[in-house]
Length: 417
Image (cartoon, rainbow, N blue to C red; front, side, top):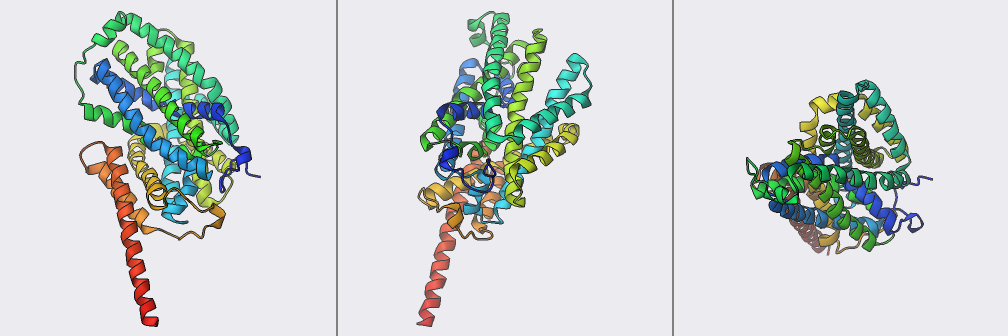
């Protein structure tokens, strides 16, 4: 039996309560790149502006991911299986490939993000660090949600405590909280740009929320744990990055800790943070390629882990820009899932096994292209542009095609009569 339920709904007997889901979702939001984004914000905003932008950004992300968590808990389905309703059986392969390939890429980049600074500080061979960390992270992802819960239970408190110690030292070095709040950036950042960074930092990863939230016992548990996780986890990541950047000019908390002389804690925080991020990436990529190949997620995870480990340095040196571009393509997918479930299906989906899916639903494909284009070229906040654009296109195209189909059907029936 596939206990990760790669190709079916999670039965209620395998669902988890509030605490386990809360820990898993917190681990999900403890995302390395968010600290770097926090560092950017810290160097471009006052602390008051920073707090407001992070709260607003997390509110937007919370509404987006909370909606996806609700659908997942109600249906028990992953992002990839939910995509079959909106995109069609084969159409869902587009969503699964984009999500899966992006996550394998970030898994490889994460390995290099761990190996490069640890190599500089300790002198341990880079290749050895990549291979060992790749094996360990793939091994834990292989065991699925149980391993993710255990890892998060250890990693979340450790990162929070050690990161807070580092922030405390940074604030002390600045001269205390009054000095931190008196900080004036040399080069100011517009609030629109700041909000773009806040939302953009996790909009692509947030699209994978159903892969984890489907294990929640109730819709309430799924939504509340997701919302709280974003306001605590994501906010902490931004705060760690911002305070460290203001104090030292470095945006990554691990680099800040190296400068502070906290070498062992820095390696622990860096390792655990990337481990939680990479495990979630590998888990989600396994579900994506399982939807395409119909092979069990656990087997796909091993293959994806090997690929990500082999190409880690190449991905790190050559592929980050491309992965960022791919990331912009993901929020429109989540937007189409939200529009399909809440606006067109009125919050009800037939059971997966009862569905006779269309091969490809073209309104979803066209809406995804349009949402991606809106994110790339329209002024404003790119992820929000992509989400809003995809929703408007998808709903509009679906209603028009359904009306045309009904008209054609009535004409045909009229001729037959």
